[in-house]
Every structure is written in structure tokens, then in C-alpha cells.
Image (tube, rainbow, N blue to C red; front, top):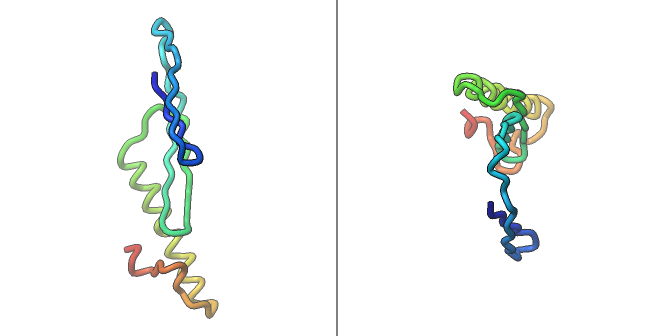
Length: 90
């Protein structure tokens, strides 16, 4: 197994011996959704997720951003955060 460490723009490759007699087990999945300054991390304790469920989570994320931006507009703020406008999210 080959790993690449790219910290501080220096790339070092190192190898780790793999014991092929052990079976690998997947613990879960982690997804990170990001739009501009808004981020959400999803952790699923199952080794699989349906595309429908992942799409549903992404839709909720976009709805939360739109709600946040519309509340900024109502409170008298500019309504534009770091170049992200509600129209761009639809």
C-alpha cells in the first residue's frame, strides 16, 4: 500500500506492508458538502447509502443556505456573502 504525504508542499511517499490474510471491513461513510463558506459533514454508520438519500441530504443543505441568505436580506444585510447569491444556488 502506498501513501502520499503532501504536507508543506513536500511530497513524501512511504509504503506500509499489508497483511492480506485479514479481511477488511468498512465502518461507515463520510461526505462533505460545501458551497462557498457553508460546509456540512455527513457521517453514515452504514457501509452504503442510496443515491436518493444522498440527494435528499444535499437538497436539505441547499435549502438551509437559502434560508440563511434570505434571513440576511430581511435583517438589512447586503444579502450577498462572499459572492454567493441565492439565485446562484438554485
